[in-house]
Length: 146
Image (tube, rainbow, N blue to C red; front, side, top):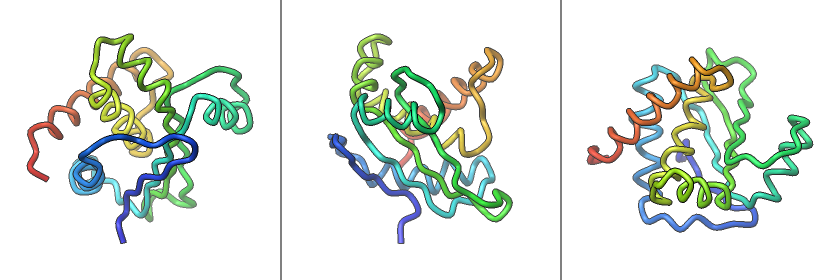
């Protein structure tokens, strides 16, 4: 059974390389970070769907592109996680940052996995490290044959 899976609530993800992305996350990202992955589910959704999750679980009343949940009882035994991604927000962020939709999808998908590997992004210094890791994995992915 695949450890990384893509699911859809009220939005589909039109991305041709889904199998390659999932394999890269499992075979490259988590192994490079030396984190055991048990299961990782990505759920693609709308802004409204993610806003409800943001309000319910994080008490935030604003739109976001991604919310990551670590569902592991003990991370030493491996990671189980869920990553919710608003494709509406990803499209808007791609335009805002002069990025392609596909590259912005890679960024948030890797961003969610990196959160599960222990990286934070609330402080400026943490955010800088997170962005460097995102860029590293985007570059590695684009030049991989996985």
